Length: 242
Image (cartoon, rainbow, N blue to C red; front, top):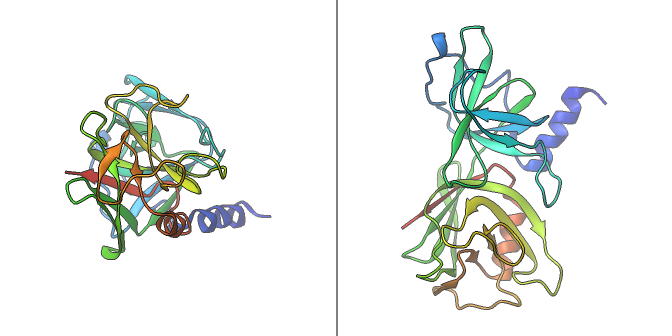
């Protein structure tokens, strides 16, 4: 199988669109500019990348980002929010990063990445206690939700889906969880994990839709989480707003 064919299969599996060419231009002299695209451009990592504070190999290292996600082993997919070319001609991507601190961004080399795009976007509205799903800028589904209680609030900010996790029948939140790049601002550890925020079901954990009783995660009904997992891939942007 050719490399192009393999990458096309990856794009199809992630529910993303393969971009023609590199999908990102250059900014002379390392000056960054935002990527303007009707879809969200994302980068699929082929190898481990070191994220830096600037598009410069000598700038401060911020994080090591593995090529695969820790729970399911799927490829790491990061939203691209800027690009630049350094003085040596190397192309860089500014991406959103998973984990703490929330909202962290950094620069990675474009080399050893595959640029794709997705038209899907999730917006969690805390006050309305609902999840609004967009495709190509249009609302396609509005879902009732359970959000974090005042003592363990759902963290506000710009995030993305890291991976979709199939849960065991007896697990809290069955049948699926969309694990997000967000982490709890209150809990550094929860149920043996890193306090990672997810959108998941209500089975074995409860909560009335429209209430604020969770530890920070967003709960939806079973039909809704099944619908989401069938459509939403890694790298999909998630906005959590008030």
